[in-house]
Length: 202
View (cartoon, rainbow, N blue to C red):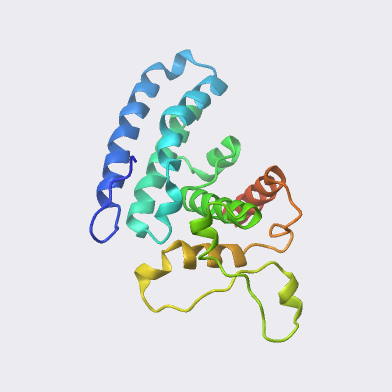
């Protein structure tokens, strides 16, 4: 379905394939950038490059920092082309201007959104049935915080499984984002604001 798997699920080859395709589109965009208004350039960039970075990126949870860095370099290069920045200009102001989450936060966003939809709708059933609601033995304040049970595992690869990664990401969100009364649009808005602040607050 468009993702290259290897026996150890490193996604090394997939990242290499994505990088090759993205840089090809970035080079093409650079050639015509002077003729395009910024908003048009941004639209073209999102449809040809960002869509590839985001495709099935919930699978990238726990992926090596090296591969995350390669994908982040693609996003940084794309931002510089759109805003016509020099190679050594600081990238954070550019991402803030474009209102783009960095790659690692985009992965967290996708996983959190998938978890929210799964909890709210119970679909897909095969994902909902592996998520366990947190139910403390005694009545505690945490019992009303809409948390998931985090199952213990010592295997690094197991922590990348949806059962573990979804619970870890979900429980790490502020209470107002885990509110079960939220609509999908409201959840997405609050989640992006939270991740955006986390990414650029330093």
